[in-house]
Amino acid sequence: MLLIDGSYGEGGGQIARTAIAFSVLTKQPIQITNIRAHRPIPGLRPQHYTTLSCIQAMCDAEVDGLSVNSTSLTFTPHDIKPGTYSFDIGTAGSMTLVFQACLLSAFNTTAPLTIRLRGGTDVRWAPSWDYFAHVFLPLISRIGIKTEAQLIKRGYYPTGGGEAVLTIHPVEQLFSFHAEEPQSFHDMNGIIHLANLPEHIGTRMKHAAIKIAMKHNLRSVLHVDAAPSSSSGTGITLWSASGPTILGSTILGEKNISAEAVGENAAKQLIQEITSGATVDRYAIDQLIPYLVLAPKGSVCLIRELSNHTKTNMWLIKQFFNVDFEVTQQQDVIRIVVK
Image (tube, rainbow, N blue to C red; front, top):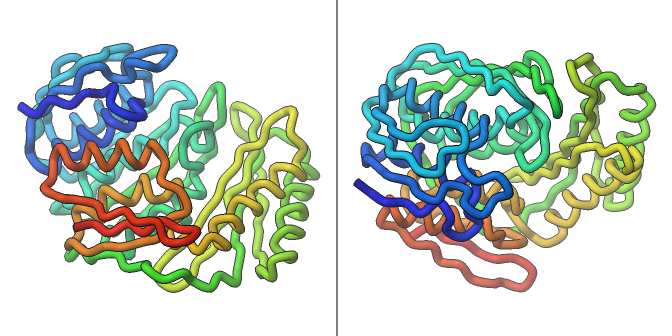
């Protein structure tokens, strides 16, 4: 049984989610200790519990220690069973993080597999729904991962109540990812979402983002998605595609930050990625790199910054796979090659 130290490096819930997914993919039983040991509330939180429960159901795994607040568990996987699964996180815990872990576990399913979730779609410390749907899923589709994502209702902190469905289709072939040259980005697309708030907030956010884009000669197409939800919330996700890749940025609205500042900051964040010469943004690389390892070796991309999150993921990957990462600084970007 492979032993994984859940407190290593960044030491968050990411280690547990990704380790369980790799356990399923490699058929390797694992024990994870010190789960989220350095967090204010150590152990599994409701969203982690939901993630691991969903993966357990999908592969009939034998699990010991799976409960909220647990700091240690053992997991013995079996084959993925196609079908339909429904789970409710019960809080505003991130559905996109649950979907990502389930997708990594089950992308090699032999028949379509559908996951329906309730929880938070746009919450702190997690990819927004629109980033998941318009940046992450299109990126992994370039590697050969086939999915369909449907947003039914958004959910915000504190009550959640959002709903979404992800269908995973069998993979025919995986391809390595080649984005080793800076791209020319000409368009900025985006979605501004808000619930139970005045419409002018979305309009102000949109105009502020467009103004920043115009200064950098980016054509903008932004939509405002206003719909009721059980909790109030707002935010913006922007993305720009060119050649083999997509760069994205996302910011949630906050009570003490103006709509204009949220829109401007999201646009500036995206433009910072573009002007650096990066071909994968600093958040996407962390989510993408497990798939780069599973695809044929030789994937290469350029990033602006190597986060502790990504370093931790690289360490975890090496616990399961005979792989290495060539990381070299090139002017304003870092070149990563999977070897």
